[in-house]
Image (tube, rainbow, N blue to C red):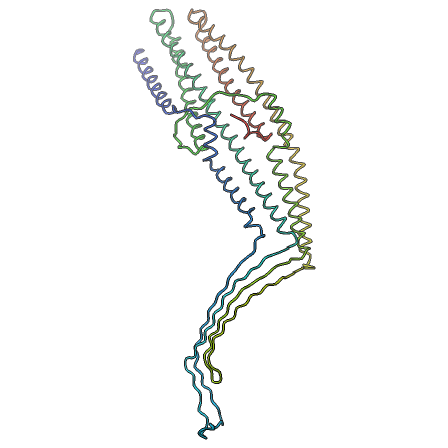
Length: 457
């Protein structure tokens, strides 16, 4: 009976190992470097592509073709045709040649044709400086759009490495759990060997088999998390969902000297503060554009035209053809002395909008200072935790190695050995989490200082 149970148990273990092999074979692939991940993200990420198109629109808007500085040129042409039949009577009139009443004059199908064409030019010489400041406003709007696109790119890069480092963490955890499973399997073999020679009890064998099952389940769950997270990364990169790859698990932290330099210039480079400055400039231009309504508008007009009339003969005049060519130019001045208060209202509202932007500026400065202080504190704290976890791994590694030797000599129980093994697993996985948490905290701090896109990963 016991042999049958052991056979079933061993069969389940074999099936579990086969499943582990299938999952592990699914995640093996070429290495995806950090630089390659950034390149693919910048080229393919949907959010970045939309932001790039927004920049293209803003670039078109700030161009000379949308400035109002160029003249307008239009042309008109027309043709008119008329056919008429007329009868002219002379009541009481006597023809001097015959002495008879004068006959009626009939004209059938008399055709009248008229043709015209003209070329018209209009150019605004002066519009109260409205287009001048509007042109500057459009240029500043382009700068703001670039800053918004930069913010999108920064957020996407931060999202990219949050997922990338999660893949790295799970990959390292997978290696830890694979080694743990290997040791547990060796322990099962050793326990069976000792049981066969009467040096161990069946309980120790069963405990070892239970630990193998638990380690296998932990490895399975970690591999499934790894596969799912790789799919998340492929979405950011716009890769095929099932594309296989490995990631770089080497982490380098920025030197304290470089970080201090970035912190000193954070107010100059923070993208949120730069956007606020751009909004203030735009609001200032809005005031000047609105004030242009107080000044006159001077325009230049010019035209060149051609008219041709083809008239049929009438009762008293012969038919004729006339061609007229005209060239005209003029200057116009328009000054709206009072528009019912519309310009004044627009100016007042524009000033209020500028005042709101100044208030927002003070709020944003405080918030950015707070965020940088919090991010710096989090980074230092996580870096310290990482250093502690590194030492903790060394301590637990030494403890496990000694426990393993003593377990082989039969000086400690399987429960004590398993506890040492669990402590090492926790120390190593905690160290991995601390390492990548510290790196993500560093990237968040670099984003706030405006340097995220200026560093090498």
